[in-house]
Length: 109
Length: 114
Image 1 (cartoon, rainbow over the protein chains, first blue to last red):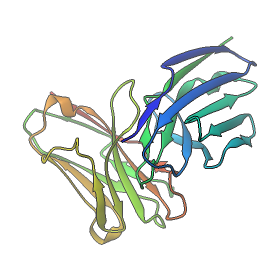
Image 2 (image 1 turned 60 degrees about the vertical axis):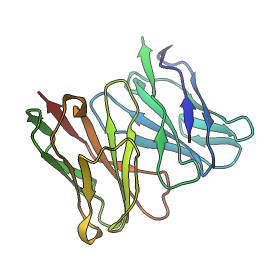
Image 3 (image 1 turned 45 degrees about the vertical axis):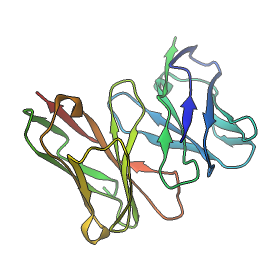
């Protein structure tokens, strides 16, 4: 089975940097994924890590440590439109993506 | 628009009725997934198709739920004898054989069971 943990809520200030952590336990591993979901909308893919280290994509970066079962999503230069739920997910060793409950990020002025 | 399409977007039904949702994936994607999401939770896996073959089904899925993907194109998800606990957003997603884990989601079908 798979177990994914991430904080329920976070609040940050516009222009700041925020780090959303995710820990996971899986019986196999094909990769760690981050999705963004705005209220009332479908999730959209943000990033993918299969090897240890940092993957940077514009204002968003994602880090993975497979030995620690740990990942984080780093959002820089926060904007109001970044207010959303951020979902950590892993495929384990199979073909389906298992999601965490999501971290609701609120960006304030 | 070449994204994932789902319909109906909203369905209100009475307990005990049957409902069917349809998903049209991105045309070149051979993998299709159904998920269910309730407020404050992440999407919960229901079932997965590769082409027309249903390769995995969640153990949480009761026998009132059935999904098909004839000809490996569109898919339907049917819920028989609906219960109030079935009220949720039903999300469909597709991916290519290369894009394991990179899913493209539809807007979802919201089911309300009265």
